[in-house]
Length: 176
Ligand code: OFO
Image 1 (cartoon, protein in one colour):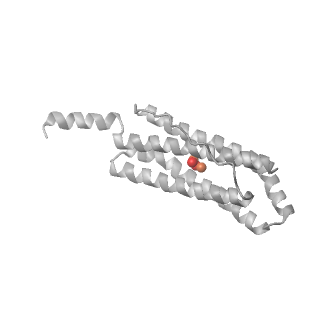
Image 2 (cartoon, rainbow, N blue to C red):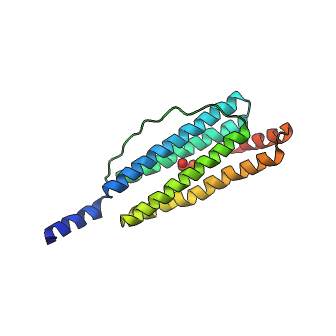
């Protein structure tokens, strides 16, 4: 390599993230908006079935997911990368029960965790320390996200089919 190529390569790496990293973060923006839509679908199901606490929980969860997406959008803009605005599929509004809703939510959060871990791994491979540092917020957040869903699943399993227990858990979710 000539020293010219080296210095221009260095300059590029100092001013922006790699094309691979940019593509993967855009894919994560889509995944976060998809999360928001999935939770909106759950909110719609919950309202229809009279679980108003769960409905409140899910609208707020959807709002948080939008914030996760926007944080990534802002990051890409901060490093002068290109943001793609994704198209999102219509989410399901059909669930079997309140337990089914939270089990699917937990399953989804585990999927998001695996995506975040993969992004961190890619930032390592790309030698992208700024993105690696930025992603740590998501690593911590996913511990919280999984914990929240897991604890609700545990409580719902504890009460089983008892209407009083389900009513109490749902009412508690109105406080979020
Ligand atoms: Fe639920 O954490 Fe973002 O997707």
